[in-house]
Image (cartoon, rainbow, N blue to C red):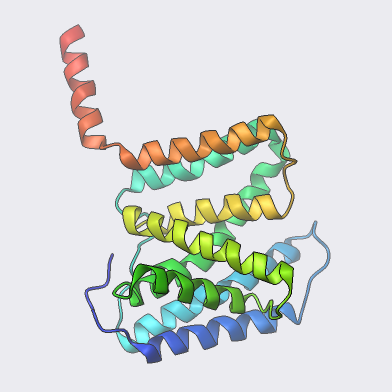
Length: 233
């Protein structure tokens, strides 16, 4: 649910960010290398849990409210949004379904902080300024500090992500929807798919299906379906 408070609470943002960065720094200092173990995925999730914990503590301590909820404007649409990439992943590579589910959960942990909390706290700012602030905080949270070309490209990608996922957060109010878009990006940069023509078509199909799902009024669909059934019966 969108917060009703209008004042930017800098202390809440500072608490959120210190906790988020602090937890990530601790987790990264205890790396798990066995990618086939459950402990590895627990470590991966721990990497992303900082923004989630920081947001929850800041909201409770300063009596703020989250900008988005888990399912947002529609429980059904949020569930379908998850089912689509899992189904497509199953078609492309059955073994990657579980991996994608794990990444969706990881992305959800992050999105609780970046979109669920921070975007709401900064929503009264100029949109361009808000995107730049979120993307810069997001970039520094990764602890990828350094002025080299790779980091500048990464910051640019996060800026594009902050803009795009920010629109999704505003339109759907769904953290699940945000997490799914976030996950597609993570899958791309981690090289789980080779970008063949078939894979590119699947990516495009997923994006169009997501857009269609959140653009359709389910009430209108149900009314038309009911009307059609009544006519044929």
